[in-house]
Length: 77
Image (cartoon, rainbow, N blue to C red; front, side):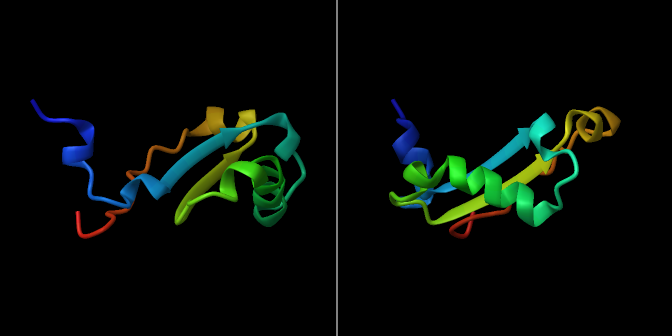
């Protein structure tokens, strides 16, 4: 029996990709949007997070074409 820990290289559980869709992003540039999300996640990000990929959209932007990019390869895989 394989566990998920056997499939994921050690340390890669510190890499995250999030997509956030919110009305609160209306009128904000990408930097302000990310600052808003970082502020909300400050406590969670204080831990062992090594990498965070973030995409932020308003509901209208998301409806026009949801983003579905694959996560970048990490730790050689």
